[in-house]
Amino acid sequence: MTNPAAPPLPLAEVTHRAIRVLSRELGPADAARFVGQFSGGSGDYTAERDGLFAGRTVAELAADIRAAVAAGRPPHTAAVAEQPAAEPGR
Image (cartoon, rainbow, N blue to C red; front, top):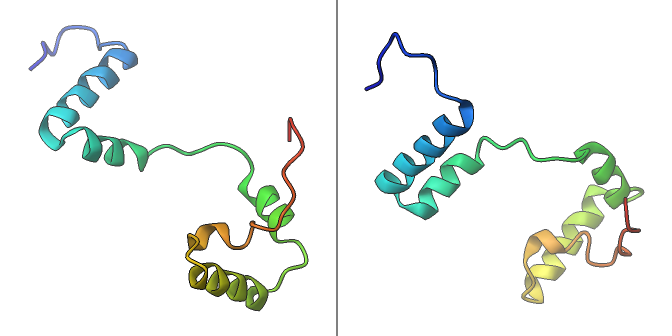
């Protein structure tokens, strides 16, 4: 326990200690999974989604997913497999 009269620790120190405790109690993999659920990510998902799926119907995307699974590819790669690579810096 910490002294209630002591000033609060810097956030970096709190984070370091918390991750150390989580890793000890849960193991590194589950600690990483736990911490990962709180990261907000980055970028603009809406703009990215609109660019990836512009002009595509749900039926077309579903067919792509079924085809990917039938070909042994991961389903999450189906809808973007035929898309050109993004330009650098975008």
